[in-house]
Length: 239
Image 1: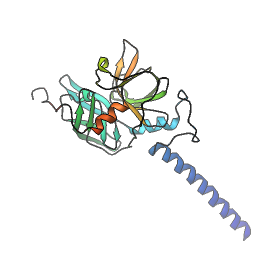
Image 2 (image 1 turned 60 degrees about the vertical axis):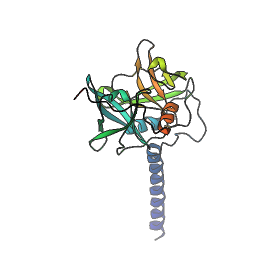
Image 3 (image 1 turned 120 degrees about the vertical axis):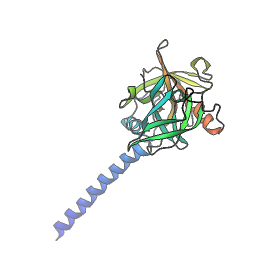
Image 4 (image 1 turned 90 degrees about the vertical axis):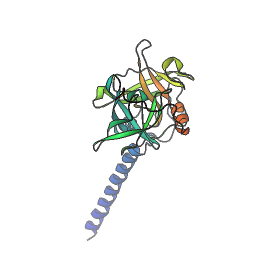
C-alpha cells in the first residue's frame, strides 16, 4: 500500500545519507582530504581531528640499531617507500617495522647521513602525501611519533623559524624549528600541516633551545628526487 511504499522510500533516503556521510569520513582519513568547506583557514587555526586521525593511522614504529644498541623511532609511508631517520639505522642494513597487521623486516634502500634521512622497503599502510611547499613562520603543525616505543602520540606546535641551511642542527639541507616538545621515539615521525600533508620529518628535540628540529619537507623532496645515496651502509660494528 501507499503507506508501506512511503516508509520504504524514506528508509532508502536515510540509508543513502548515512552511507554518504560515512564515505566522506573515510575519504578524509585515507585520502587526506581537507577538513573544511574549501576555504583556506588561517595558518594558526587549530588542526582538525581528521589530521590527527590520519597521523595516528599513518605513523609506524621503527626499531633500528647502531653501535650503541637497539634504537626505537618512528616512520611513515610515502609513494617512494617508508621514510624515517638515518640515525636509527646508522650501522645497519635493515630495521624492524611494526605495521598494523604484523611486524616486518624492511631493508634500507637509500640513506642520507648528511640529512638524517633513510628510505626503507615499503610496507602496507596508510600512504601520506608530501606537501609542495614548506610551512611559514607561525603555521600550526602536528608532530606524530611512537613515544618511547609505545603507542602513537601527537603533539601540536607552530613554526618558529625556517632555516635554509641546517648545518648547526646536523642537517645539510633546510630545517624547521618548531615550538613543540617531543620525547624519545619520535625521531623519523611525520610532521603534518592543516591539510594532512607531510611538511617535514622529526629529527629530535633540542633542549638548549626548547624546540623540535624538523628536516624540512623540501629537503626530503629534493633527496627523494636524487636517486644517488650520499652514504653506503657500513658494517654492523665489525660483526
